Length: 548
Image (cartoon, rainbow, N blue to C red; front, side, top):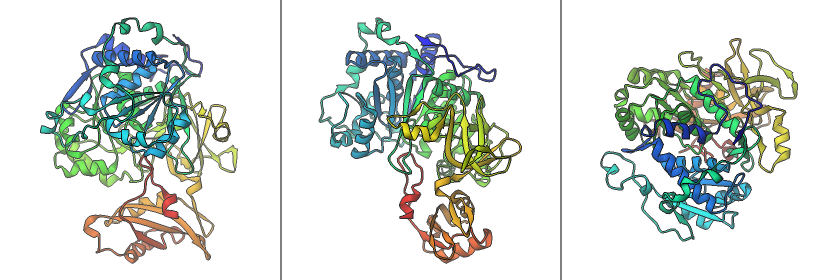
């Protein structure tokens, strides 16, 4: 049973909200609309009823393995229906889900599993080579799946570019997916262990690892309330209904991809259009076939979709949101997108793992370019002096962004000092710099720790990067500071050139252009061309590597 919420007061705008877990939302839809498709996946369709039965069977298997409420179960797989089934099964036990980035290598995976004290791992067959190389971990139960558990190997390849990885035989003792999810008589009696007493506000439901742009990643512990509250906020802000079909092409192990493409979808009883890995042609094929109504992408993904010359086939789209992840969403790109689809492409939200993201969201049709939107339901965003957090700043004044809401996390797993430094009561201090305008729109300027001090002026790398991307030769830019005896610090830009400009545009040309378009303290005095930008496993730029 679940205990009543203490931090949440129902809001009229949150249409679907109930004090329950995501798994309970899903179960209700499975009971009321069992034949409704919940997941579209490369020509295969999976209904709410079928997925619910698979989740019950998997929960039964996990319980038989001794996994119970409070235990941590890690998921290590690409986007696939098995991720959804596993997530729901773990929640049915009152256990804790922790998705691992499928790009993690052995040492990184070993660190996360041991930091979590994970007792079970559900992994994709093609990723096991990394787990097999990992140091001793706390995992005692391994369940292995493959894309063959969701797709007919030959059938899907006839019309989609996605190719399933070759099969391999796991070297470790494990439970097969088929065995783990086969129906048994125990499923009918599952209520004995599938009804743990859960405190929605205080019990941990999900542990998401921060990107680790500075130091080792930390596990942000999120409660059931944190998760379902924010899923409801996203569903309400973008008007999700049960008839929506939402893209899930972004990684759903990531908090943003999960909330838009999975959690908010299941809160509303809608459908997700799932891609294992993004491919522009496959995206358009599935969007047009299944009638995608809501898309969530990054600018490079939109550029690839536009390059197919088929974007106009996606004629059911009504909301097209995006995330920058180091490549700015420009008004120019939005205009190109609108010409083909009839819809604006705009910044989805501002947020972080510690608040289950989406603290400020752009209301559809109310875009303010450069902004990440307005504070969402029951969310108080303040801008404070980074040197004196008690001093709140006014509209237009730059300072540290802090958030108070029912979605602020429980803390970092095993790191009380880091928790105390970031969280005061129910308010989270982000370390991000930004400001609110007079209409309450939030503008993110950059990380306080990454700010460059040039001639006494504060320079945010993101601003420099945004301007550089206006140059026709620049595909992507990363700005960092370097020591300069005269100015203290100066700006250096690392630039990925568009293919047609390679060998044509020089570093001096970029510097000259920047000098004409930026203030003297802001323009890059040094430019270096690179082939690609180093990134974290979640796609965030690693400025520190370039700074080295």
